[in-house]
Image 1 (cartoon, helix red, strand yellow):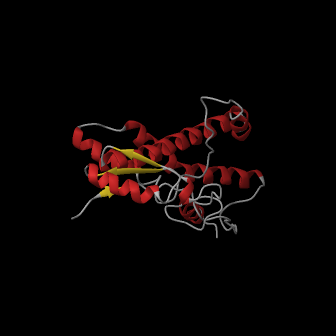
Image 2 (cartoon, one colour):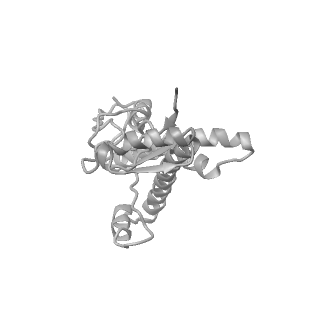
Image 3 (cartoon, rainbow, N blue to C red):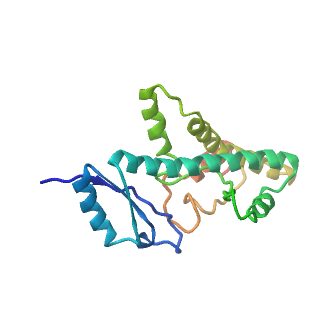
Length: 205
């Protein structure tokens, strides 16, 4: 009497171009009957369904999508630091690289990653992989780079304040944008809180 299926969340908060019904829905069922029922349900609601062989495969799709983003965000965050040291503008580089019509997808640097997916989901797989005696080195390294970004941001702030002949200690600092991305009110796992704590730790208000 009970049929179990799983369809992972797919959304891009703040992106007005894609609503829930416009995004293909991955569906995995616990057996053919469950898959058929879930597929029929979601097929009436979204532009199209993408049936997969099991609930575990459906979850692996979700993890893969989030890991892809986490790793590429970490890559561009690392490039930001390297290019800044070289006097190269990362934003100009990304815009020019984005002109290539194949083999490249632009990601943009930031103070870290936030939200309820990218900072957390990849590490479900990293944890599970240890049961099978695998180390997910890309995932772990991406996490380290992304978690280090608030420290990089505050160090750049210190340099900028010093160049103006001022001290961060005792300074009044206004932080605009605490959510983890533009156009949303979601502050879960936002690196902004780490940035604010670090600034306060330097004696600023």
